[in-house]
Amino acid sequence: MTIRVLIVDDSSFFRRRLTEILNSDPQLEVIDTASDGREAVTKALALKPDVITMDIEMPVLDGISAVREILQSQRIPILMFSSLTHEGAKATFDALDAGAVDFLPKKFEDIARDKEEAGNVLRDRVKAVARKRPLGRSTFSSTATTLPGNVGAGTVASNRTVASAASGLTRATLGRPQLSERLGATVRNANFKASGQSYKLVAIGTSTGGPVALQRILTNLPADFPLPIILIQHMPAAFTGAFAQRLNTLAKIEIKEAADNDILRPGVAYLAPGGKQMLVEGNESQARLRIKEDDSSRITFKPSVDVTFATAARVFQDKVLAVVLTGMGADGREGARMLKQAGSRIWAQDEASCVVYGMPQAIAAAGLMDLEVSLNEVAGRLTTEVKHG
Image 1 (spheres, one colour):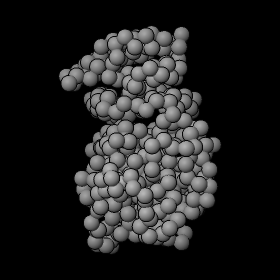
Image 2 (tube, rainbow, N blue to C red; image 1 turned 30 degrees about the vertical axis):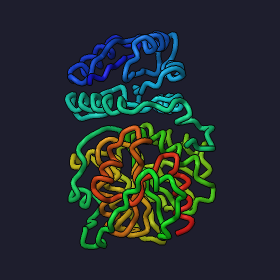
Image 3 (spheres, rainbow, N blue to C red; image 1 turned 90 degrees about the vertical axis):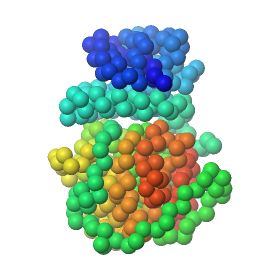
Image 4 (cartoon, rainbow, N blue to C red; image 1 turned 180 degrees about the vertical axis):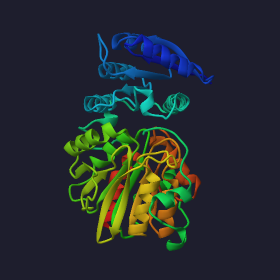
């Protein structure tokens, strides 16, 4: 079935370029374009596209306002295009707050090494978001305190590559994997009971749809959350600082963009900087983060969930509670495998609450998942699990 796309941008050049890229895929069809937000609202109502790509800065009606108006009457997935600046980051998060499901840099060279790869990323992203209908404005709302009932796709690094990048972590130093427990809907929705396992660290990895998911979780954690949290979100370097600042203003715990040599402290969440790798070093009693440049072609994602998870396994062994959230691809699977072999526990977001059920599905398919959990349940269950360990 063809995915029907409406392109919204005030640049005729960008509209033509995006139309050419998307129409080159037989599964995609650009049915029309709009040059401002007001025209977008009118055409969205008349054409009912499967996906809308939306610029932020436009005349007549800006993209953020257009997203709000469209989602008041229709549940259409909207993919934002943003400039990689601090102001661009702020506007992008405002668009997610309005109900957009994801974003991409407007300069295609910022998301890929060449034109062919950039085209593949764009086409894959549009197809991925087309499968998920947005929930509306409350999804990313900073005012929600009571929960209702890179960016980018690519090849995942091999286990060998991850181990090398994680400073010599080997399977021989880790224990045997435990059997996973895939919990169905009935069990998952029953009263949650903590496993009783003891933890020293929570590690969360995500990609497409992650900003919304992370805000939902972190803003619902209590101020006395007892463990440090590390966050690995595929996101451009220009965005991670602004995203951490935004989260810190909304959450009860402290949230910061991770810096080299940060000591992991209870009740603090550390967001991996975009374009670099975040490694865990030291020991259980005094672990720290190392932020390193990575210009190698061996690992697609920077930051990589695999790399950070693998180093966490080396330092904390069976004391990590890892959560894999919405995202394209399978980043996190090999790092989760290492955590699992060390005796740590792995949770994965359920398909129904994911924007893209790629990364969690990879965890489930590999038999690594101890618990399947809806996004709305993550914060409460995390708190119960770590406080009863």
